[in-house]
Image 1 (cartoon, helix red, strand yellow):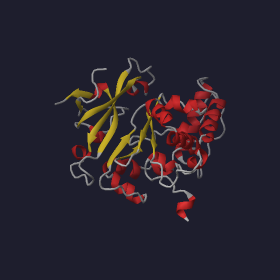
Image 2 (spheres, rainbow over the protein chains, first blue to last red):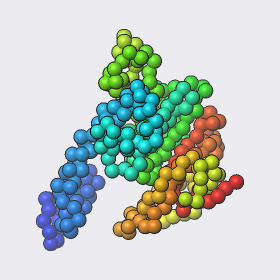
Image 3 (cartoon, helix red, strand yellow):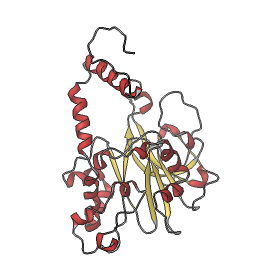
Image 4 (tube, rainbow over the protein chains, first blue to last red):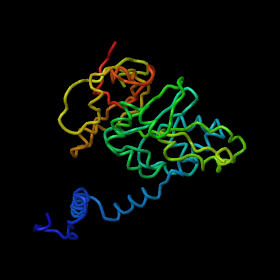
Length: 211
Length: 93
């Protein structure tokens, strides 16, 4: 692939340890830039935006929903508007749906077709979320997958798996842990982990309860 | 928007050559419309350089896990919710 001639310039395509997909992506980027469809700066800006997002943004939404029932209703009704209300850019996905875990219903999220994920609120997805075993077993054996994350649901809890196959992104509002009545909103947010907002674990227990 | 929440729908079992967003495990399965999202550009034509118009309505459809996986090991009322475009759905009883 490196010994070829054509009418545009691009950095040499490395072989060696580079995965084939990386070489292909760089070749595609070079072609798109060459044709004037995108600029290198667009790609860099996109990557910068993506890595600037972290689960701390999603955690702020959840903590606010825990302390403010009216905000929770707005979050459940329109996730993008609720994110903007806190000054958080929800990203390019046109619809953000928040779903609430309760003592009767537990939600977990997967994208069986690829890696659809609320990147604007959680940052890049973890590798396991994109792995074939998670993507296939989260729909066919979700309770088995939860058990591997150390999550066992009570017998009377209905499990709902959301397969985000299209334009919608899903965010799980986990249950507020017991013993957190006296915590401030930012202390609550610190308990809300990425995996809890995917729905594979419960939020962290408060430090006082752990010790 | 041809369908409304609570309506029973069946995912068409047809083959489709090329990019599409209907998971294979769902084809031929019957579920219930949970939510009507909105209409979006069609990924099946958008993937090949078209504008994806006309937009296709998108639904969140809920399926009983036991209807999707006959040997499902969880609770009888566990459910699986999937976003499905209207042109993959037909009315069911």
